[in-house]
Each structure stands twice: as structure tokens, then as C-alpha cells.
Length: 246
Image 1: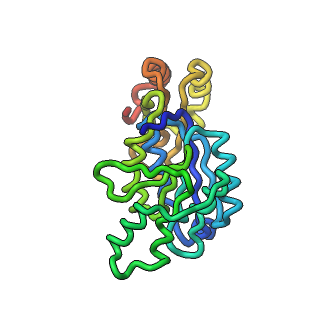
Image 2: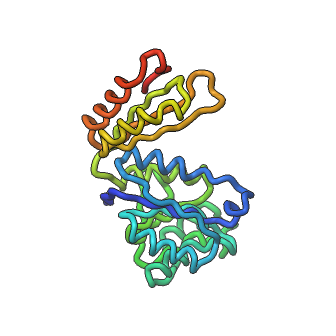
Image 3: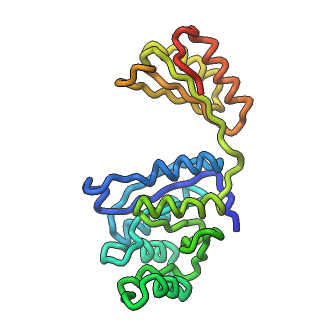
């Protein structure tokens, strides 16, 4: 099964993230993968462990994007309410999946409790997707992938996303690292942005790096357009002001 998507959204869930107790790490991993797959991440939302809030956010993100990824709230404790919230967003119940239940019993053996089996809950009607190398599947409800929040486990599930999600075309990226401060580049950037409206052009200052002061990036799905914008910009700056290109 392959889900074709042009736009994606991410819902990050957890009181611990909103309070600053834990640092969020999954957005950057997902964002990088989606660029490789050719999918544009258009919205990210961070919400607390509240069923109604999560369900409302899922409904909204599904209107904005072709595919939605949740991160967090799928463990065995009282504040792990994401599965229930996803079910509510689709107006269905959550139920224990026999396959997931069997996996949990295999992993935990005699130590397996009702708390462990909470991790076998899925929204009724959800598919369980995985790869040949992944023992633990990922619930997919409609166009919503339900992913764990623990960064190490989240990264393990990215192989499933890599296998089952595709965008129209992979993004092409180029970058120029300059020895100029960002304000010095503004007139040149404005001109290049106006001349190449179909290319995403970004400017990022670096304050404490001796090798360069500003990084300018060029991104898009059409390689000739990206290369044209990149070349136009490079032609407008002095070679001596370019630290390197990538």
C-alpha cells in the first residue's frame, strides 16, 4: 500500500513538551524524510494530552493536508490518549487488535499486564502497516499515521513511512554559503526572489561560525528552475564573497 501525498501535516502531542520538561526531536527527522520523498510539510501543531483537543486538531489538519502524522501519546499510561483521540476524530471506537496483542504477549511474556495491552488499542478500521524488517506495525487510520513520541522509536518507524508514502517528485536543493551579513544581501535576494517565483528561496544568518555569515537556499521540485535561480543568485554576488556552495 502506497499513500500518494503532496502536502503533509504533523501533530505533536504531549504535556511534557508544552511544559519544557522534554525537548521535541521528531519534527526535524520527519521533515527531512518528507523532503526526500517529495512531500511538502505545510503545518505542525503542538497540543496537550487532551482527547478533544487532539481529535479537533486531527480533523483540522486532515482538511489542510493529504497525510497527517501524529507523534506521542501511544504508551500504556493515563496520559497516552492519542489512539482514543484518533478514533474520536473518525467517529469510531478504539479496540484491541489481536495481532498487536499477540506481539505484546510475545515481548513481555508473563510480565504482560492490562497496561501493556493498552498499546494494542487501535481505532476500529485502522490498517497496520510495516516493512519486512519492522516487527512492530504502525496504525494508519484513513490518512493519519499514528507514531510514537519517544525519539528513538519514532526514528525506527520512519522506515515504514519511507516505504508507504510518496510525493509527486523529490525536492531539489542547492545552497550558497556567504561571507556577507544578511542585510547586505537583501537587494540581491529581493531581485532573485522576484525573478524566480516558483522556487523556494530562504536566507539564514549564522552568528558564531567563522566559515560563513549567511546561508541562502534554493528548493523546488523542478530541477531546471532551481538551478536557474541558484545560478542567477551566484552571478549577482562577488566570487570572493562566496565561502562555498552545496
